[in-house]
Image (cartoon, rainbow, N blue to C red; front, top):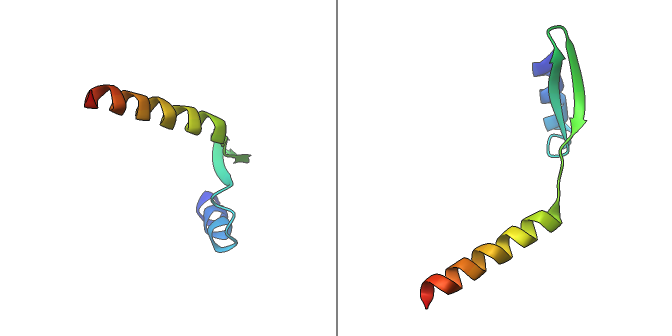
Length: 56
């Protein structure tokens, strides 16, 4: 069942937004990925600052 669900999500281009999770031995759930673009931007800025410090 998990395989078929993942195949369906991929075919309909939903696999980037949803994932299949086994919540128990015989139960599966569809969950959204947690996408925090703000956190990525902060991390990139911190990395750029570290690179600038290393170049001094």
